[in-house]
Length: 161
Image (cartoon, rainbow, N blue to C red; front, side):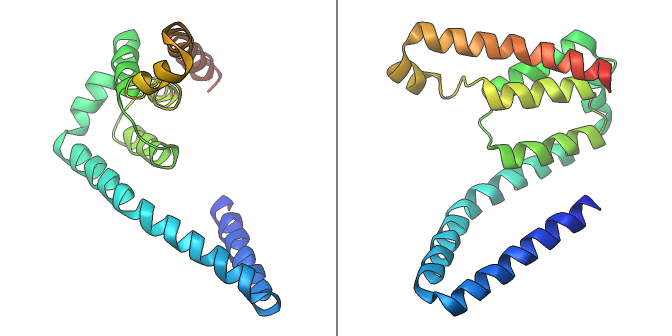
């Protein structure tokens, strides 16, 4: 049902855009050109990320994923997930389909929550740039607090769900 609502919203937006194109063609054409350019700029990165995820999930057997970061892996699985999430630099629109894929091959819910939380909040790869602009102390403090928060959020959500 949710997918139907999203498709309806996208279709409605497209129809509105076409209506605006009819009424005010210059602005709408320009916005569609910007959207097209953004899409084609993102396409190579998205393709590479999806291929990487597909290769990793096809090479690593589901039993291994379940054993290493499954629901029975406990705190060690959460730590492995947290470190992997902290080191990985993946945009959010790729992270959530990746999380679903991990859950479908046997990863535990709390482990996936820690992975996604650290993936989105902890930036080891971006730390040098962050240190340059915000300073070492603030960067370490922010990343450390985000790392701890990821565990708190995972445990709370894991208990609620």
